[in-house]
Length: 392
Image 1 (cartoon, one colour):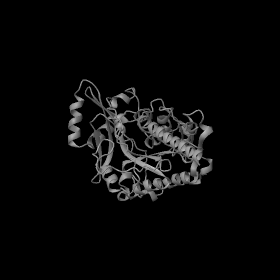
Image 2: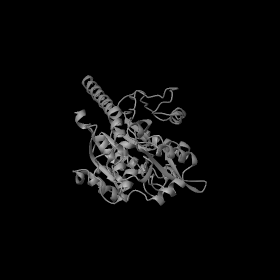
Image 3: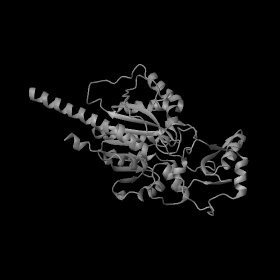
Image 4: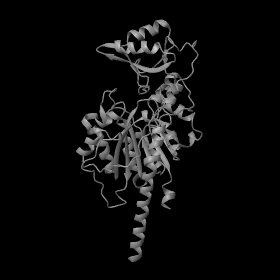
């Protein structure tokens, strides 16, 4: 009976264009409800999932009725990072956008005994230090008050795709009502790829939080692919390639060190692919190039510098254009995503999304086992009650 209740069903909030769903489905989870406030993201979501009308709700999360949310095993929340990221103004969890997190908490609270036994949060790494760590602490405390013990870890999508995209994840497990065991943070544990020094210090310095740290996570995969693996074969006559004047302007925006590296690569017999962003340094717009074989973090196209630049260098050529939506989809591990709408709509959707294989990895290596644990504890609790009833 317990296993039937806790089928691998998911309710997802801040669903975006559906990449959280794609990642979970690859690990055999089933989305039964999805919510987002953005009609553009809704359109992109709709074009990729056949049963869209059955479960997608376009609404402000603060206006959702908890009783309308289906019972599920997992609730996910990739709430807006605008007020938490270094690129934003860091207004924190009470900012105009990121305060939507409290709408999610209110939904869980309103569901009462029906709330999911598992919760997955995803946000930028800046969430950890927003408002000197108080925002992160407030969020974890809010989950604790609802009965969830919490774990936190950081994963860079570069372990799965050629894109540097560092994200902070929180898993909440509703086990307080199922067992009398208390979870204590080890007095000391070393930093790892999952928990770098800043996160370890946060955990250590906040022992009052009800932690449930998973120290047995499997090693992350080591990516062998580079940016070249996601590049589309765009005809050399395509008008997406910049003209000579624009290329020269770009090269004049690079540092001497980067320009020297480019000239060396230009002499190569094969093409090398690089990415770059424009950034303002000391009041001047500069082109900063990555030479490590991966792309920078995809961002939403809210400013002229947000579009990522692709360089094709070699054979005595320097060819430059912007990354296109198909390449952005591949950088998010969504190779077969049905891209529709305008260019900016697609770029905004991917820049604001989760990386598909990262979510699949978390589901396979954490959530599946966590659900089994919760089910087993629930079954033990039920058996204990039944045994007590027979003795009474």
